[in-house]
Length: 352
Image (cartoon, rainbow, N blue to C red; front, side, top):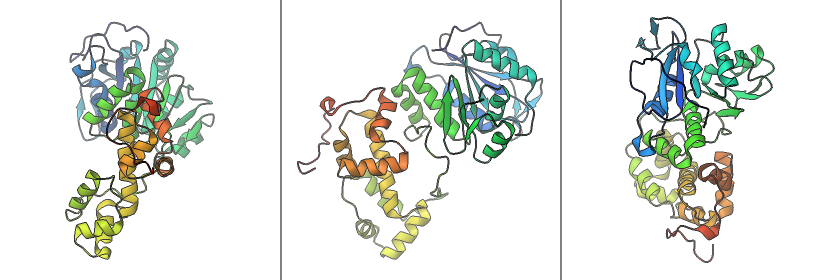
């Protein structure tokens, strides 16, 4: 955990815990509402199930008001820039614009915070604020892919990565487009409180299992706005029985459509074909089992319908850019061996 916590100035609202690390999110005129909401949701909610030492959270206005956020909201901060002097983690939820200068007073406060051991993190265009401090020089950093070339051009000493979800080194973290900020914040929870706490937060957000920072920013498959209700029963049936050796013909028969109609409606509803969707669904199920159990890779492969560990590893590496063992280590904090099974009835047949 970061260093000792200082006394807080009077706040407009109670902080969740008197003991936990203090997370401070920057407020500025033109605040990126979604990015700030990510920080407040993850660190600002009371989570008594995770113990008395959960995070404290406060918002700090870095300039005089009145301040407004995207969407026309007026902002009422917990305090001013002096909160940065006692924060354990400072999060920059976006920035006013890639061409907007960063105030010298803010740069100085961030440098002082880093020198005393506070961690600094940015979401999306907030990377430009960290870059202005010089703390990212010579280090890998990421931002939204649309801003990557601008960041590299303005700060050529930074190793800009326009592909990863997030990067972190020496207590300084950057993340890509807005939603990647969720992944980074959950990663910070994992570092502080362990994988179970991180998984608990992700479940409460109705998020899939944690994504590693090295995963790509781009989502190649389209996200449907309104799933085709005629396809939904088939999708539910397959998800409930992934172990079954499904074929496209099997799914077509379950839909009671012609194959041509089924494949067209499936792609319209999910943005991908049924075969690739099935592989992705099995990988997601494997991620959940890997994070929650000590079952061997063979058992996991059998449980989700891949049949063999080799097939699971192939698709897992292709879609997650990690091996199943690397993913498990990131969640469990240690490698589990096949001798440490949790009896779950997922053992493969002898031929596997």
